[in-house]
Length: 270
Image (cartoon, rainbow, N blue to C red; front, side, top):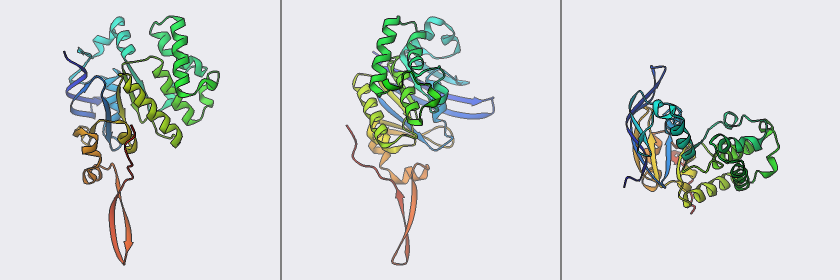
């Protein structure tokens, strides 16, 4: 039995036909995996996540999701679209784009409601998702009045309320304080323990170490330059520095200048 969630074969995508965003991407993501997508700015990470969420489509190559070709024609069918949206949820990098309802309560309930769940089920999902992020006290607030961290938590709650099989996160810890980052890490790990597939793009290598099992590295050529186990990639300092994922810092010692890669990984959280 094929246990793959996503299968990408020679995927190319460009914007307006002249701005390459992905160039020949091959990738297979299995059910229950914890995947991190890393790379410098402009290497195609967010575009890949949008592709996996069916927001954009390749102009060459093929994307399969749950064994079906994922393209505009497939998602144009209302039944197919609803089934896919129930299975896959994306937390956008910019929470202000994701939160558009008059209240936090309506934002979290929006997904389940528009995917056709009964009102009682919508309310139960709203309750579970808001409790998991600790945002119950924000439910009647206007989203634009929230702090950056509060917005991020509400955006994640709005996706968790769908209870998808696949949770896709774009820079989920950007701008968050250490306590909230720990909360997000715990949520991701807990969701994975319940069988959810996790796919995230991030610059935060500490998050990669804490969460990911497998890592894909994108280069400035908008393609995967390397993939493998977290430990194999994350502790290759030369490789990380070559691809602008860590930086070197210089210091003077006995009138000689020394250069060292700058990174502070601790022990992996389980």
